[in-house]
Length: 309
Image: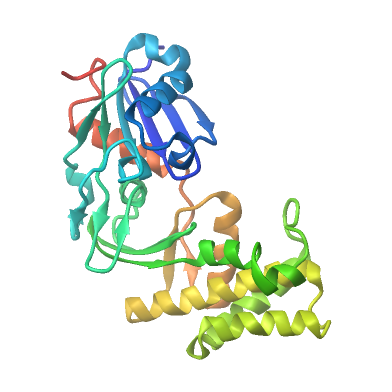
């Protein structure tokens, strides 16, 4: 079956394409480590990369819709943010750029007075379409988002640089000097125990400041009460625990449950951290980004018979 649409989730470090039939059926997907940091800022480079990754799908000249950092100033073309609140399921004004066989339609991000997002708004749309149209949600990543959605409307969101801080602390400076290598595969019971201990420290000591809690990790490692192999897990727990404390402060209360949109491994880490905080997690949803992009394509009239003039 020939694709009528290609959805593209194009982020900072990776890109994922999904071929979609005219009836909305997902046919196949492909991914590559060719995010905007790799492709650069030249429009022609994005068109070439898209054509190469699409391969034989391009022969059907399907419509193309893309979200994420591809619409940033460092991407294919900058697309203005939509100011929150945004009714997610009502569709969004798409920006056209010249693609390899027809226009590519870029999805706008969303902004507030103190934050911006690109790509997460489409994940939240997919989450709403999956039945989670109201309530708080966490979208973990380099810059984790806490979002508040009410009846399919994105009201507000809060950003925590948890992923970036963890990467910086474990690759540069004094924490990196006492940390063991990253574990391969799933954590064992000892690793989870140190992670959850870190979460508890982050939750209880948020008032001290994250920097003070992080220094405690280094001190315990130097005093040999914390093995190098577990430094990363306790540090991860502290950062996520402090993030949860900050997120609940932003919400103004501790919710009973939250939705999580993340990879399986990262979602598992957040579920355990939330459980330590006494917060339940809704069942995860697979591929909410593609679901959201299909909905936006339908609203824009792209998912009919290929390229829209």
